[in-house]
Length: 245
Ligand code: 6PG
Image 1 (tube, rainbow, N blue to C red):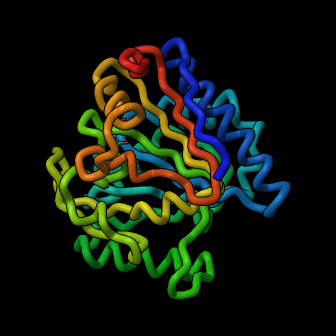
Image 2: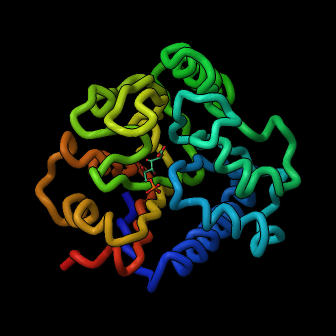
């Protein structure tokens, strides 16, 4: 496993720019090597700044027709709901890119949760032509971090943390959108690169717990994310990195 990297940026805007640069770098590498860039998007609010930059300043830096968009998790709401992770990515980026509809593989949050999870798993298995015990390998998985150390929709103390076979599961979590669909840790850990984007003072304790605390993935789920044959990169702004030694 290649080393883990922690990169601290001055502020949120610098983090958004560096994250966009990382996306462009990995896109170029993946398209040259594999003919496509499979990008697993994160939700929440942090990535919006990067998505905006990818659709503007970096628009000509990526061969968008070779990019396949996936999501690491989704809230169980319709795709036009303001809390939908797809809606956020569409508003900030996808609506402004020269992509075909078949390049966008959203999680169908409008379905009943279990059905939506099974449907996405079936779609991933089909698109990636997976055998029963295989996991998709994303070129790049973007991940966020909650102030309670959750990532994607893998929340502390939930059964989803122990899933080792399913690709996607329906979860009920302690958050404003209780019902969600999340990819599982083995999927993220099969990515070529995992890139965490973490900004703000409110995340400092979670960052400290995950990177320097005792190993306790049940309490700090982001500790589950450790690519088995890939690179783990943490992009932090100074506020989020404040408590690191
Ligand atoms: C989601 C995300 C989630 C998010 C964190 C951080 O669906 O909410 O996938 O894991 O990345 O909750 O969210 P913020 O970026 O809004 O702080």
